Amino acid sequence: MILAIDTATKSVSLALTAGDATLAESTWQSANNHTIELAPAVKRMLSEARVSAESLVAVAVAIGPGSFTGVRIGLAFAKGLALARRLPLIGVRTLDIAVRPLPLSTAHAIAVLQAGRGRVVWARYQAGARGWESASAGEVGRWEEVAAQASSGECVIGEIDPAGFDLLTGRGIKMAEPSDNARRATYLAHIAWERWRRGEADSAETLAPIYAHQPTSGNA
Image (tube, rainbow, N blue to C red; front, side, top):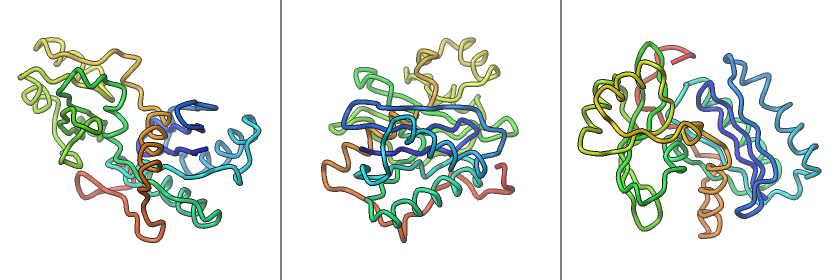
């Protein structure tokens, strides 16, 4: 079983999976209370699923981009659990999780996250042999830039706020279904499961968060 932890933004998500099956999942909006909410939520999920930490085969965690504080909290918790239980740790980029629900037949996509102060973090993706692929960790910009990048037919998916929705709709930009825009830890777990089966894992000692820009505050 894999425990997946995503605290990269205000949208926090946890999942417990066995292969392709989701045993438990919880997603909620946190008012920057990741520190006090995360550990009890993980404990509650394991308890309700009647799963012990000894049954885990790996821990998956979102490593950013996202909130400077949120990413650090999730990564620190995942590292502590992986080291304590001697479990493989698998870090996944947040935008990789966001784009995961889209069928590969879409071919081209832009994944977005909220970055605060009217900004978004975005990256372009294309369908590849192992799923969605992007060479970029993410760029910080405005919705106008996302719309310009999507003008050649890319589908936009992720944290689309009302301002972004209005702009993209007005320009005829294709968007993912609303149900696919919610970033879920189940998608993180599925990516991690594929990597784990290939024998891929990260070092709990050296895995570091990634950012699309240098944070200016804890709520960046």
